[in-house]
Structure formats: C-alpha cells, structure tokens
Image (cartoon, rainbow, N blue to C red; front, top):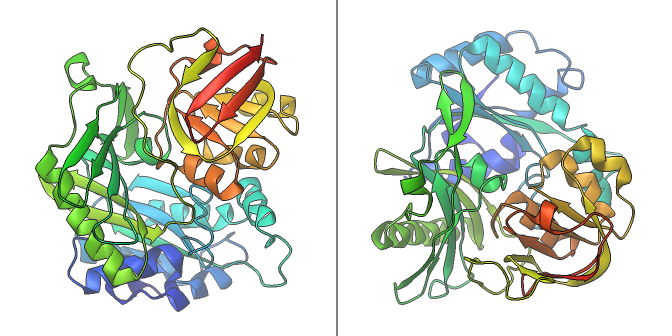
Length: 392
C-alpha cells in the first residue's frame, strides 16, 4: 500500500520520488520517507477518496518515521523528467502532522493532477489530449525545519561552475520566487563568486502552519552561506549528477548545520549568462535592470498582474509585470510574450517554466509594478536582464 522511499523507482513511485530513492540508496543525505504509489491513485477514483486500508498504512508509515511533521509532495509519472520539469505545477503540502491530515494532503496532490495549471502545462507540451490517464504517486518525507535553503544547478562537466541560490528559512521562498535570494557561483577551481541580495522575508514552520515574516534588518544583506558551505554544496551536487547521470536541478536545506537533499531533477533548459543583481536604480529612467531569467527578446504592452483577479486583462503578446509568479499563473505564460518579477532568482519555478516556454524573463526588479505603468510599451531582454520602457 506504501513504498519505503529507499525502494522507490520510477515505475511505482514517479518522477520526484525515484531519484531520491537512488540518492538514499547511495547513502546521500535525503530525509527519510515513503511513497503512496501509482496503484493507490488508480484505485482512488481520480483522487476523490482514499482506497481501503491506505489511512492505516499512512499511520504505520508515519510511526516508522517517529511521527514527525512531514512534507507531502506530488510525484507524477511525467514530473521531473529530462524534458519537462512541471516545476510548481502540482501540489505540495508542508508541515503536515498525523495520518488523517496526510490523507487529506494526498488527496490534494491527486486532485492537482487535473488542476487548470497542470492541464495547461501538459497542453503546452502536447500531452493534454493523451489517451493515457495521467498518474500521480505522492511522496511523504520528514520535513526539514531549515535555517537556510535554496536551489542548486549542477553542470554537465565536474570542472564547470555550479550555480546556487539561497535564502533564510524554508525552501519554497526561493523555489517559488517570493524572495530574491543570494547567488553563489562555485567555479571549477573552488573559488566562489557571491552576490548578496536584500532578503526581506522568510518562511518558517510554526506548528502545523507555515508563517512568512520579516527578516531582521541586520540579516537582510548578510550572506546566508560562507564559501566553505557553498563549496560543500557544490561537491554534493557533483555526486548527485554522477549518480543520476545528468546535470541536476537540486533543492536542498540546511538545519542545525546538516545539509539535506529534498529534490533532484534533470535541468530542462540552459541558463542565461551570470549577471550581478542590481544594488542601485538604473542609470536612465527608461531602462530597468534585474536578473536574467530566460533567453530572448520581446516587445509588448506591460500588463500588471497582482493576482487571479487580473488574469482576464492579459492578452496574447503582453509582458507580465508582477510581484512574483504563483504556480497557478502558468496558463498566462502560454500567452504572454515575456515576464518581469519584483522578486525571485534564476533558479525559481517562474524562471524554469519561462525557459521551457522559450519566453524571456527578467527577475528581481524592485517595485517593478509601480515603476512600469500598465499598458506601457516595453522591450524585455532576458539575456541581458533589462526592461526598456519605450512609451509610457
């Protein structure tokens, strides 16, 4: 009824759980857990109910972990593949405690397989009308109460650079793009290039809730990693790439000085060239500079989007101007010509999906929604990280 994570494979446990099973079997630091396999989903009438016996199996699995708070995450059959990341498209529920709550979270993961954003993502990749019903396994892992967390991209060759983004607290703030993270480039010779960002908020667990709160002013521009830790992460990333056989997009967390690997998937699109985050306003009033997120150039009408109530205002060819991109906004990325965010980094979900969509993205332009008027004509250069306002 459930599969120990150490035994997970792609045939039973999906694209997110299977690589973690490989890493766990190799002795790498992966939080222990178990998987609700494809068979349980197939028996569950499209996620509307739990199969008989599953709730008891969840209780036994949690007891075997010591009954901690857990992360419940999707592990779909076509998720985290070499051609499609599905980054942020399915549900994840963190800080879940007890079998009943885990059961509810499992149902949420199953249901997200048929959400508008997931269907839009599959449609964009030509998989929305497949005769095969999509399948969803669900990964349940001990939650890491991270002091620092982030994302790391490993290279094709061990002597090439590793890109790391990191911020205070739990990892969804970096992966989801709600904070602009520090960036660490670990070069092949072991040297580290650091760009420190203004990290204004952090996400932490409080009981069974996730709480976003302000970072103390003294810590906002304090580096979250030292060079030795960045090099250690890079070395661990090289081990992961060697085991899994390709460059990897790795989510990691540090708690009490211990490093944990919480996700690893193939990199699906090349990164733009490194760029330094802006620390002062642009030299001219018409050009704004941020972090290059996705290659390409586009000119269109700026469309300010602050939430779902703004979605109907977006038309084909518009440039999205937003605080950050929530995964539910994925359908907009099918029609937008480009995207500009106020927060987020190169390795965030928004940047990954933009690269897969082949549309330019510029990230981390402070107060972009106020500095770029709605309906202004703008030109976005995703490789240079610039947004030029050509008419107000």
